[in-house]
Length: 88
Image 1 (tube, rainbow, N blue to C red):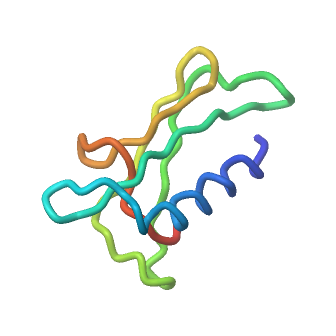
Image 2 (image 1 turned 120 degrees about the horizontal axis):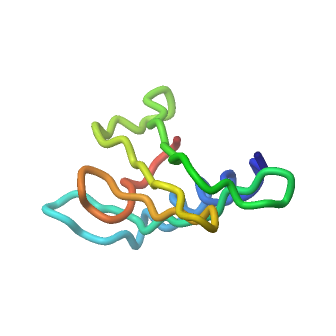
Image 3 (image 1 turned 45 degrees about the vertical axis):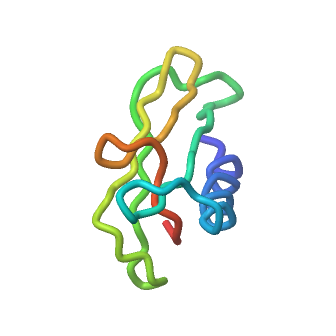
C-alpha cells in the first residue's frame, strides 16, 4: 500500500481544520483519497483514521471510508461527512 497519499490526507485534515464544516458545534473536514497496491486500486476494504490522543486529538469519532471498485474512499464520522481536524 502506498502510504504517501495517506500522509497527505492526514496533513490535509490538519491544515483544513481551520476552515472545516460546522456540524452541531463540532467541525468536520472533507477527506477523500485512493488506495493502491502495486499501482493497482485496492477494490475492497475500508480506511480508518485513529485519533492520536497523545497529540491532543481527543475526538470520540473514528472516521471511516469504504473503498469502491476504483480504490476511492470518502470519509464519514458517525454518519457525518468528513473527519474532525487533528492528528491521526
